[in-house]
Length: 167
Length: 91
Image 1: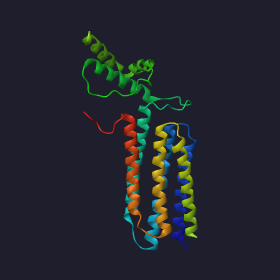
Image 2: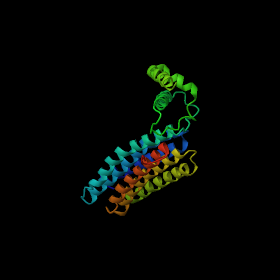
Image 3: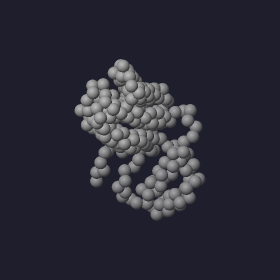
Image 4: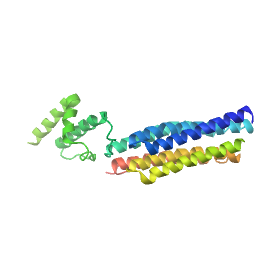
């Protein structure tokens, strides 16, 4: 084997090992968010190394530069983070629980304040077209008071205004 | 020699696809299944790429592009459907 073939073999083996790392992370990690953290990075890295191996092989042995392989690489690098973001956001909004060892949840306050604002809007407007999010069964009512501490002054004011308007 | 190594890499990718399919079938929530299917799409892209080198043909490049597109569109559509209960807004 020449040096280029060794390079192709090493790149392909690194790609295969990264795919195994992605699969092990998908199996072993405790909840959806950490699983997405594992697969979102290492599957892209695996695809990058495997595509580089294929590109170098065809450029070396046939003299063709198959640019579509590098196009795939750019495409995967653009789309996989977006897909991971969409999956994680839908999981959080759909109420998938975090692992019980998690001790820090920044999004909880944010979504609680968002829902308080939405409630005040739907109280002030009698007919609102917006579909309510399914957050009621997940966010306890105590969390809304935690959300008011930060940006909640305006929210509480609008809630009061909305209830006054209704009376 | 190169062919043997690449066949070993194909076996590694098949092994990780099997591990992914465990998560797809046994995942406790639907988001786990979507994540497993997304990862499996990525693994399929890599598999076809190495298969092109093993079979010494460039005929499969379009397959790689289309599988990448479909994996992204599928996971995006499934997660948006889970989030809103609806893909397109209807009045």
